[in-house]
View 1 (tube, rainbow, N blue to C red):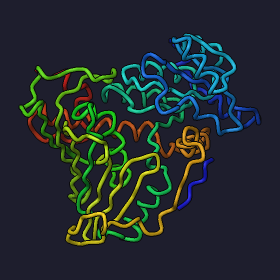
View 2: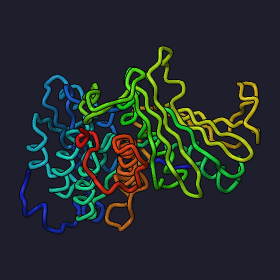
View 3: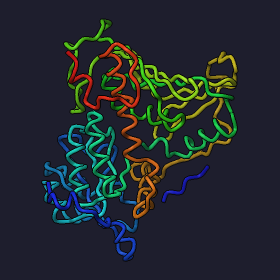
View 4: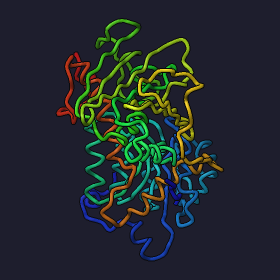
Length: 390
């Protein structure tokens, strides 16, 4: 399978709009794009300020960043016409059709997104989506009310090899019937609760891409080998909301009784080499290790034995994809698809709704542990479980 690359006024927030980008397409003019960045607080993710660069029909008219040096550097890289210290001023003056929300800081994502929705802008943002499900619901309601199209930085699912992988599992039955999924985080200094949020969201996005949404979650969390308690709740190394634990294990229930596991544990040998997803089937195992282009290998063994490097093989027929310019190309399929959806009733292939699914799974891990019972998905209480824990 080959993928072609290709607070303001309340009245504005409430009124129906014909999206500016749709008008741009109809008139043949370039889309006006802006970038929201913050060098000192979450920066630009993985070069999110460059997402518009491969689109000849998009002009970057503004970039905002409170940090002067960062503003100059990233503004030059993004080829922004005008630079701003305040993103609100930029949005009000430039009235963009498209906005890229670049900072990784999750606690500010709702503020940025609602400001963009208020002016009727479509866009793209860095992951994770939000601190909790209440925020995610509010953000999605804001864009759905105006049929705005927003994508998020889940770049692995749009790589050619992962698209091919899904076909190989379900059409070619390359490992027979799926029996279980096993995912792990990067397990570096963020192992446990922070790893769950920052890197786990990529694993969860792959799980839901391949299996759909789970219907329940059961979890266990410890801190330094002891049962985690409210006293162990802390803040992540970046503002992402509360976290707990430096070892966690979660089980999710997918369709047809297929379980999915996610683990992250603090250890002395953390190298990030286990980060990814393994899919176990009746006829073998598929290994997906996450890198710029995911590495996918297969073990053709119904018993799952002989799991050594000599018996793992590259996925037969998988496309060999390379980036000439990784910084600009990794999100290109998401951006092309997003813009193609503007003015239609079609949801982008990688949307904020997909991002909310990963938040749902993250929050379910905490919810199950806090309540000491299996958590049904979707969660009834949309507030953060750790903020309710006492």
